[in-house]
Length: 58
Image 1 (spheres, rainbow, N blue to C red):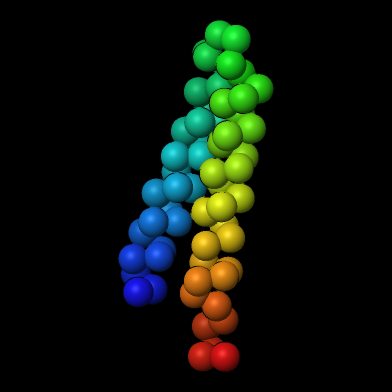
Image 2: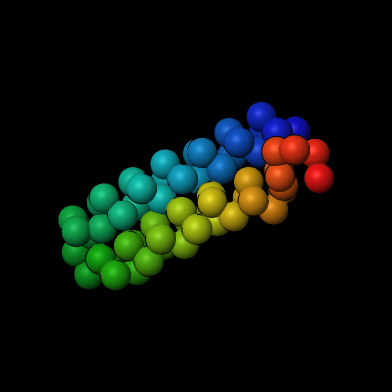
């Protein structure tokens, strides 16, 4: 379960970085694309914090 959650969150994180990087070339959709990248990175960081929990078994 931990490996699957990590791989999913890493894929969402990389996708968010890609969205933020390509936002300047999206004519007319720069702000929406960049905001989508920020939200994707936020979700990617939230997944391990909520699904995986603490590393000491608590």
